[in-house]
Image (cartoon, rainbow, N blue to C red):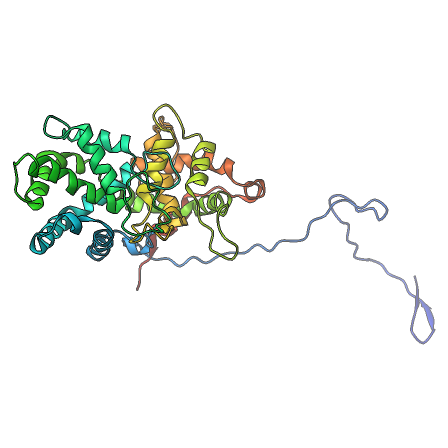
Length: 391
C-alpha cells in the first residue's frame, strides 16, 4: 500500500491485517435515501418512593367555589329592597304592625324567594316574572281559591299590585309579578281572605294564618338548595367537572357572548342556554323549554336588584356548570349507566351522568377543539385525590 505524508514523501508499506466495519441493516443510497427519524433519548425517571395520602376536600377548593350561596345578609338586603319598592306600607297603616309583619315575612323570606325563582321561570319569557295564569295555578295548588276568596278577588289584587311605585323599572314587565310584587300580593291575598271576611283583624294575623293553613306545604316544595347541597356540592361531581373542564369551557365560549356588549365579560343568556340544551339532545317529552328555564333560574346566584340591573339574567361559567348539571340530571336522557366504563374513582348518580354526558357534549365543541382533544385518563383523577405524604 502506498502512503503519502504531508511533506510529499511517498513510501510503500506492507499491511498484513486491517480492521474493517461492515454496517448492518438497510443500506442508505445517496440518490434514494430512506426515511429516518431522529434519535430519542431513553429517559429513566427515578420516582420517589413514599406513601400517598388522601387530599382533604372542601367547598373552597372546588371548581364551583365562586358560587355565592344565600346567607342572612343577602336575604336581608333582598327583603329590604323588596319592602322599599312594594306598596305594603300604603295599606298596612299601623307602624307597629308594619314592623311585626316585616319580621314575620323575614322568617320565611328564603322560601318566598325560592318559590318566586321557580314560578317566574314558567312563563317562557326572557325576563323572569310570574304571569296571572301561573299565579292562579299556584293559589289553586295552595287551596286558597274557594268561597272565601274567588277569581274576581284575585283580579283586584293583581291590578293593585302591578301598579309600579317607581317608574323606570327596566326589568319589570308591568303585566306580570316580579319578586317584590310576589311578596306584596301574598299579603294582599291574606288581607282579602281573612280581614274582609272578619276572620282576622290585622294583616299580620292574616299572613301567619294563610302561611300555616295554605302556603307552607307548597312553599317547601320549591327547594332548589336541596339539590345543590345533596347532589351537586360534593367531591365526586367536582372531580368530574375539573377533569373535563376544557369541554365545559369550550361550550361556554361557544354558547355565550351573543348579547354581551363590546369590552364586557361574556355571559350566557337564557336564549343561548336553551340552544345549548337543545343541541345537546336534552329536550324530550318530560324536559322542554319550561324545564330548561327553571334550571337556568335555579342556578343563578341571588341578586338584590332585579329591577334596574340584569345580572340575574347573565349567566357566568360557574352558574352554567350548575345549570347544565341540573339539565342533564333532570332530563333523564342518560338511562343505561350500569354498562359504562367510568374513569372516576368515586361515583354518585350525578357524577356518573356528567361523565357520560361529556361524550356527546364534546361533539358540540368546535372542530379545532375536537381535533386537539385528548380523552381524560384515570391518573388525572388520582392526581386530584392523592398526594405524596410529607416526611
